[in-house]
Length: 237
Length: 267
Image (tube, rainbow over the protein chains, first blue to last red):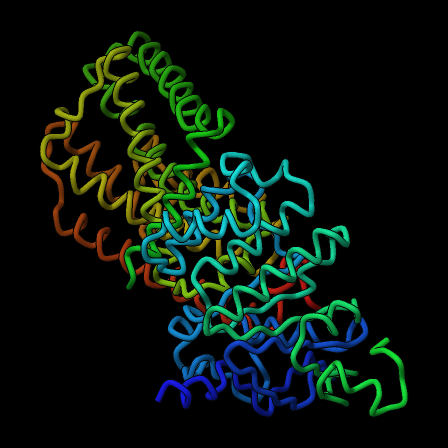
């Protein structure tokens, strides 16, 4: 029974489209993310990555298609579906006028986190944020703010974790630590991750599968470690 | 309705008020200034008018009631603006929080801040100028209730405007009470207005409250049927404003404005 549940995808996207007037930003894409799997969503700027993430996050309505999160249809049961998700993005920092702890407390309530204090201490520890507990997020460095965003993103142990360029503003050493922390958290739990990045080395290191998005379409997908060789290349770059 | 999710909004407001002089001071300052200004004004008018008319409960009381309604509206809008100012829409609306829970959270925040404002006004107007709610008897409860409900409706309507037109539309919101006040019969009876525009007053629940308030102060009975109509009208406005906000929100999700709100428009 447990093995069966493990194979069921936590995120299922089918026939997803988004039109902005005459412009078709996402053209009927479909993919799945399984528990403990990290799927990379790659593409040039404007390829449709953030549009896809926004639709999965419920802040952008698809023109067509369906999104199922942990077996719950997002369009029909938005709140139930979103309770199983969380996200972090460099363009969505947490409010700078609240302290790290206050932000976690507020989002702990929003995501219905049980035994909040224990869980908050755990994520603060995982992202080395304990010393910033009572510091306002706005005075943290961009790298530290990114770590706070990631701590928030893991607070509710989401089944689907959406990470939009999570290490974009972080130095290489910290980025490596963060990748390891996220990877460890994913391996321990039942979380599936959709991860966008422009850093192909990062993708190769962290992702189990990659989807290449171009002009709103998935043009290529596969294992990032074997894909370059299949196309006669050294790296994903 | 999940009360724990709803509580996140007033908790956030509590954290912000607790740590910010810039937010705490206006909660006390403007209502205090209003009470002091209008307190002396009523004292002056009482002196020059040489009548038995009770200016303190009729005029200073009216200003207090109107300020209370304004604080209710601003309590809703300010809590919403916190999400606008911190560009927090993606974080907040990407959670399981539902629209009724979000609006409910804004209303609870507004209840708390407007109650503090009301208390401060009562203290200043009571200690400084002898105003007491006892002057209105038991009618003070329906008066406050109608104004509270209408303030909520105005607040929800105002945030719908800002969500639709973008952050800069905040400047449409602040003058709303001032725009309504000439027609709301705050300072003078509806009969003072030209007959051709009195219908506007009839559409505004506060006008019934202020007419009723003056009737109580003059020793006449309040027309409870009209006050009941004001209550029903205020409820109607809440339903209407919520419906408008829900439509605007849905449109923002559909058009992509919510995801790119700082752009102000997606066209």
